[in-house]
Image (cartoon, rainbow, N blue to C red; front, side, top):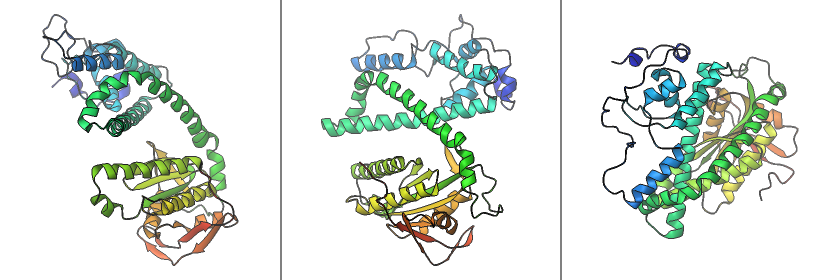
Amino acid sequence: MSVEDQQSGEDLDQEFDAVPEPSVDEDTEPAPSQAVPSGPPTGVMSAERLAIKALETRLLGGERKLRRREVAAGAGVSVLSARKLWRALGFPNWGDDDVAFTERDQAALTTILDLVRAGLLTEEAAISVTRSIGQMTDRMVVWQIEALVEDMVQEQGIPDAVARKQLVGQLPALVDSLEEILVYSYRRQLNAGVQRLAVRAEAGLQASEEGRDGDEDDSPLPLARAVGFADLVSYTSLSRRMNEKTLAQMVQRFENKCAEIISVGGGRLVKTVGDEVLYIAETPAAGAEISLALAHAFTEDEILPQARVSMVWGRILSRLGDIYGPTVNLAARLTSLAQPGTVLVDAMTAAALGQDERFVLVPQASENVRGFGEIHPVMLARGRGKGLVLD
């Protein structure tokens, strides 16, 4: 067992200050590597292999020439510390002899560590932030590749397997533009996130005080939000009768329509899970407008089934890009009670919307809900005004 494996239980702050482990002796013949070898290949490389190699070199910022010990030593940390950050990014566990890294990898690792050394991030925060980047970019890349492959299949009439091979030749013309848009979007989203989660957070809590006595289960939670769910009706039975292409089109249509409506309404799409979407808004009125627009859109859609929708105004905990708390759980329970094409809210949310003439509130029969006891659902309907206007 290596020294770094024996130390796996030690705190990261101790590791950041540890003396770097010595790099591998360059005169020692390395074991066969699982990564792409740094030396010239034997024989003649095919055009396809050359294209793959050229794309990798461009994306990684150079050829793989470094082993993990060399990168860690260059960044001034132990292999264990480096491995914790690489795992947070979603990298595999390379061995000592794998020539898997470039100088850009060392620069990126140093950048993360310098934030800790400067006192701008704690070790725990550095790993959490790094993990957010790894997980989000992983999902983004999968999404983009599948979108490009699907487009090639449809537009060029080629098989899926052929499209995936040809993608290697198409990507070099897209990389710089996609990267530029990514950085642009990150900065815009960061600014919007600061406004939602910092600047306006106190105002939201003050607005949520009305009708409360301070004993509610969600009272200690730091953010006030309208939490909504939209759930497609009969999705499971429909998906069983669909082929792969039709199912993919339905899921994509559902997600696109939800994303558009939630965005226009000023909300945020938290996540989609199959046939269900979770979203939030900063005020009960904004949440109500989004919820009504979703229910109406799926009722009018000629392809998608109707949706059950619910919305609850309350307090939540926001962590790891997701949201938690009794408000979220109650909204999920209300979704299962809603009739297709309708929106249900709870009594507290109905009270918050009661003086707004844009909404009509129709009390429903009380229900016993697991974890909440007896609740009093209220059906939300359109009052005065046109609601959300989509281009």
